[in-house]
Image (cartoon, rainbow, N blue to C red; front, top):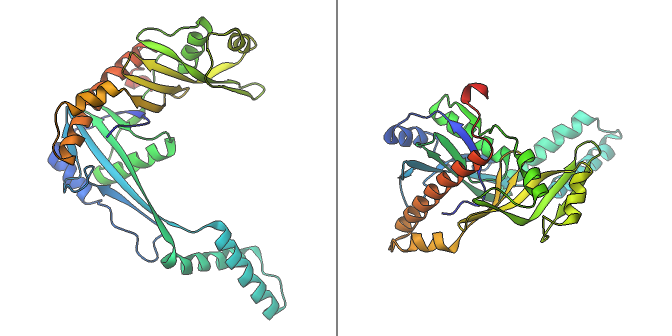
Length: 301
């Protein structure tokens, strides 16, 4: 269980394990019925387990399953156009916008029982030591969807995106301008530059970011919006201007450390990987927020 993206939130959470498991059970996933367009709910983070939570290293892992009916717009529109044509010819009149929309709703309703379904799993865990929620997604919308579902299950859930004293864009731009990052971070080989005033956008891949060419872009007002970095020899990742972590890759050394525990079952393997991953991310975020001037105090959010 190695996360590939991180959306990070500060969270005030005080439910104990049993109370949380019971709360999630009331919002357990159930498959789509014939007329459901989408269903969402909690499932065990470990396949084959009955528990909706998994606790390791002062962290609780959870998983939400989303099942969605797939109705291609081309199929729906073709069915709508055919029906509109049929009605207009029979009644010798043009259908109005509201009539067409009502007809479209009826057709979608009739097609739902025959539609294919698509499943998606979203994982997140709460780190009780730092009172943070770490969600495995690059999408803010999906992260907010996870928080919403958890709020429905447990009630009020004070939760705010992690913020730092220094704007990530300013720090990334400075690191690229000077040609090196603050230890233990190291520059990668890609970045995305933009100039908000005129909309210019440049993507540099597999390049020496300390080169004169990149420096020239910065000298005319472009700023770094995304930057590939390494954290020591443990992680590589891309940082964005919103403090989102994308394209996260854990080193082979960390994978080997999880394997050194000699897990014999899928559950034990999950447990070992979760322990190593959560400990690594905890240390990584401490260094990252430190490089960014520290975390903004909660009362200032």
